[in-house]
Each structure stands twice: as C-alpha cells, then as structure tokens.
Image (cartoon, rainbow, N blue to C red; front, side, top):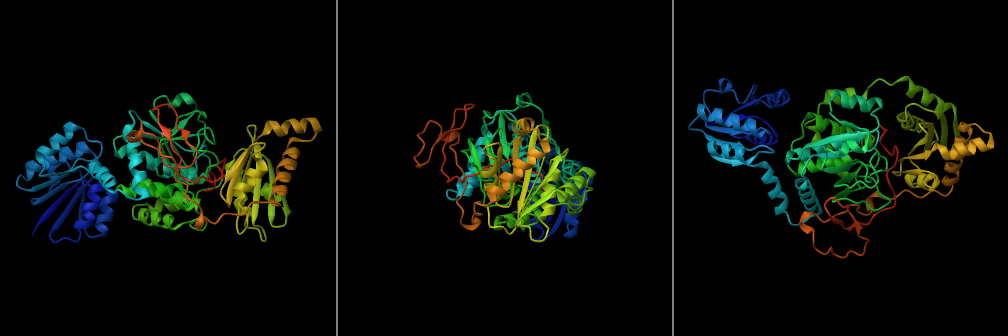
Length: 531
C-alpha cells in the first residue's frame, strides 16, 4: 500500500490533498496551520499540527513525499530534511511563491519533480488565447510583474467591508507573484461593523495622511473606486497602475490595468474570481473578508446581485471562519449612531413615497447610511435621503427600494453643480462643501442648519419629479476597460471609435478605451458606510 506524506499545506498543497483523499493508500499531512488540520480531520484525513521541517514528527515510512507550503524557504528546508529521512522516496516539491533562483536550485537538487506554481499560473493564462477573462488576467500579471517596488492598494476614504476586503485580496495576489503590497486608506475606519471586521480578523492596513506617505511605493492600485482625488486623499494627478471597481464611472479612467464591471454586486466578487482563476486558495482572513464584502454590498444577496456574486460566494464559503463572520455582523452600536437615527426619524419630511431628513451637525458620517437604511423600512417609503454636516462638508446618504428611479443619477442631477454625487440605482451619496451654503446662511440671517435643510431637501424633492429611470442590469453594457500593457508599448493602438486617453507618465504608457462607458461615478458613501 502506497504511503504519501504531505509537508506543508499551502494553496498548492491544499489542492493536492483534496485530490489525494480519493486515492488508494495512506495519506498523512503535516502542517503548522491549525485551521488546515481541523478541516482535514473533518474529512477523515490523518493530519498533524507540527513543523514540517522537523524530521522527528515524520512517520516511519513514506513512499511519496509532497512538499507544498507557500513559503519557498520552508519548502527548501522541509525537502532537505525529508530527503535525509526518506532517501528512496519519490519527491514532488513546490517552489512556493516568490522563490529566488538559489532557492529553486536547492529544491531542484533534492526533488524528483519540481512544481513552480507561479510559472504554472502564467502558463495557464498565456495558453488561453480567447476570452475576456484570460486577457484581463494576463494584463494584470504583466502590470504587477513590471513594478520595481512595492504596491500601494488604496481604498476610498473611510473604507467599507467591500473596499477593505478587495484591498487585502489584491495585496495577497500581488505578493503571490513576488510583489510586496500594502492595503492603504485615507480617513478612518469608523463604522462599528467595519472596525469589528478589521479587529476580529486582525487585518493590517496602513492609514495614509498625505501624499508623502506614498513615496515608498512604485505602484498605485485603486479598489472600489476608480479615480484619484475622487473620494480618496490622493492628488488628482496621481498616476495609477491598477483600477478594480464595480461602480459605473462618469469620466474616463486612466490606468495601465482597469477592470470596471457594474454587472456584479461587489468589488470583492471580482477579487474572489481573480483568486479562483489563478488557482490561489484564500486564507481564512481573505476569504472571510471577501465573503462579508459581497454580503454587505449586495445586502445579503438581495440588492444588485448577479450570478457571478453567487459563484464567488460559493468559492469562498469553504475557506471562511463562520464564527468570526457572525461576530462581525453583530457588533455593538455606539450612542452617536442611535442619536443620528433618532434625529432622522424626528426630522423626516415626506413627499409621496420619498423621505428626506436633516440631522444637523454629526460626528460619525457612517451613521447617515444606517439611518437612511432604517428609514427605508417605513411603510409606504421607497426612497430616503439623510444628510448632515461635519468638518466643512455636508454629507448625504440615499437608499431606494422598489422605486422606479436611478438614485445615483438622481443625486448627481440634484447636487453635482454644487458638490459631487453618485452611486448605484438604489444606493448613493453626495458631498457638498459647507462654505457654499454657509455664505448663503450668513447673508440671509438664517441658521446654517436651516439653509442646509432648505437647499438639500429642496433640490432633492425637486429633482425627484423628473428622476432618471433605473437601468436594466441584465442588458447593461460591459464596463470593462482594457489598456495596453508593457508588451504593447511602442505600437500604434488600434482604432476603436472611442477617445483614447493618456495613462500617466510614470512609465510612458497610453490607455485605450475599448469599453462603452456609462455615465456615473462613485462618491462619498455610495456604499462605503453601508455595513
């Protein structure tokens, strides 16, 4: 009877074990990841929590040794130790991710067969010559591999679960091909569920305060928003390498790689599909964050959800920590949120099935989205807008359900001339500089809060009378923008009948717009405070 020993259980090892379970013979897995061991034991696999480089923990016999952690040096050490213990066994050894040539040479010296997962991933992509997904992934890999330094993956300000999870997943994807990456954000993580997500999963994110914080990075990626300086603290002229978002853009998006698809409910869905495409197994933290990001942005698969969202969720479900997910969904709510909701209820103003409410000065802008969501539960109400002001800006959060309108376009029509607005058909937001309204208040001797109410509610209800109709998501155009990569430079871009826009000057590339851009853009809390 054949005896197989698996040392380490990274993404490659996990896939091997899943297949080996059905093979005849004995299977023994040694890994220092407790969660892996627990899952394998549930499938009746003999698994041990131990250092895979420690020969004292090895079984007496092994005919086939498979070394398959994600870390190259651990694979090298485990393979060397196991070869001394089992000199006659067949050795299949993975190089892991980010292995240098010296490490690969050392592994090759002790292995009968070497598996290079990075090379396998690249070959998989390059060998697929048709399909938008394959071309998209090849471009992403090309951009990542071209970076000479670390990548900053920047979320929108005050990131929500979808943005947090997407930044984390893209960072891990970059690291899998040898590129250091940090998930970064401007502002604060203030919503109680967002804080719970970060704390319970111990997610490491870098808070940015100024442009100088980006000097250490060679590349910039934007997730869950698409333009620098629009809902983030980046200068508008920042050169961007990667953009991944599910919100429809209003203006051309400039980057070397752009994936904009409004036919999915969350950016986390796109990142989950990336991981699945490349054959990467997400760890507990990434999988749990991504699934929560999808659930929040689709409101538990009831809002702007697509088949792709369900597919991504099914892929992630096997890797998530259900206990942590439950704890994230039931955090305590601070007094400020309750007070904002109470003021929104007291100050509500109705016109037909629409409701607007001014809550005055606020300290927690995330509370506006929660108040708008709660008020949508009132009988007969299909559209809500809750707004308040802080730090020199009026923030507004809107929600719609069962309404025959596009709320994102409605708020743009109402507020773009005095601020910025945007979002989805049923979830959108706006920001208006308070200085504009404050000047009016001073001249008319009215209170600032009264002027804010008069202008915001007035514009909102007036615009609702001629509000744009919500689009049909099933027949909407593709919003994927594709850009030439390093291989295309120096060539004349093909004509598409669309405007070609520059992609910045860091590496001298150009961007070619081949999609059919829809009107619209992401703003304040189109969903960043919707947890």
